[in-house]
Amino acid sequence: MSQITKRALAASLKRLLAEKPLSKITISDITDDCGINRMTFYYHFQDIYDLIEWICLDEGGRAIEGKKDYKSWQDGLVSLCHVMLENRAFIEGVYHSVQREQLENYLYRVVYSLLFDVIEEVAKDRSISAEDMRYIANFYKYAFAGVMLEWVKNSMRESPESLAENISRLVRGQFSLAIENMSAV
Image 1 (cartoon, rainbow, N blue to C red):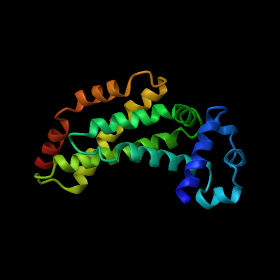
Image 2: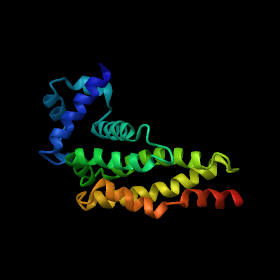
Image 3: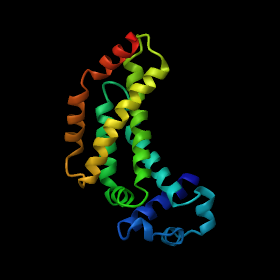
């Protein structure tokens, strides 16, 4: 029941963001739209920003699930971009609000999750520390998320497939090279 309520609250916030800016949306607006009382909201979330984070991490996590290895990371990235497109009003509403940092943090966390598994797989038979693998994943996380944030800023005009392909061309073979260079130190 908990997930159903959370998803209902998420759907309400998304509907409201299609109509008005985040700064004009209150918890009462969300609960009224959802048909529940305010205490139910607070049972699940501390505030609207907590709900936003839950939406981002839940939907982003499901988008990349099963697509976090070397052969499928590009599919995970495409899937993540499609989820963002499907939730365009929500993504743009958060991006253009004072809480843009929430969207950035969400992207960093989801993209890191995608990349760390890839780095770990590529480094499997190499002598590289977990700390160095985290460093590599963090380095690429900022590049990927930066490109994606620019994509959002430009109204998500480029197709997810094209965006992922352009990123892929830039990093092709670079994960192995980065691991090789870090393990040689």
